[in-house]
Length: 340
Image (cartoon, rainbow, N blue to C red; front, top):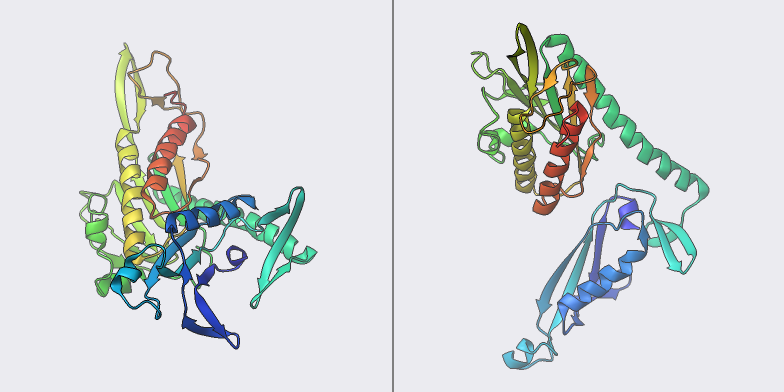
């Protein structure tokens, strides 16, 4: 139920005193790994996806234990166990309590209650609204850049699921001034100019023109945007015809760096969240794909390509980020017609 609202914590091993937390009595656990596995197995009945849960085991010394030897014994060790249930973004969640019997629950105060029809409908509508919000944000940013740039370019957006929630606000320039975030260390290979605050957050314009082929914007809502000019080369394959080829290698390398650097930024912020990686390619219609490894050639077939968003379940989880990088590269190649 915590995932349906804003997340929360469950504590095992704290006595209750008139409805309030009391003494740290602890619970006896001989095998913490087994305890966690059993709890995770209980979550398997939740659909459409299992909420993200972290387990913390805090050992405490039983007041009745007189010797360190007793305390060190696995049979006598007691723990306060803390479960951190992260906020869910696939609401509403349905739980199968008995075979074939499903229920939607929410939390009101300290009680679990079955959802009303209106609550279920609103949860489904809010989930659909996130998809529309992301689509509108991408379109707005694409149109703004398209009015400024006539050459083929790509946009990458990393958008947290909370980007429309005013409570999840990051004062990026203030964090930089307070030395809590060093963007030059985080995005050192991407930044080509000095940090400048703007109404959206911070960006790094290159007024000299030496590094103006890519521009990074970091938003106060936690989103990250990279705009990059795409490489187009002229090749004379069949005299006297000159053909124009799109080369994505450098862009795909920068895409990989951007995801890794953003993950590190969120680690420094201490924030775990689900994010969507959105790649947009503009102005490349009619260009040949440069791919010397295959015989069959292909052209980009449209002027605006909005690739399907790729989900990163947890931006600070290394495995999630690596999987998303692989999926993003593959999706981008397929979107322009590259077959491998």
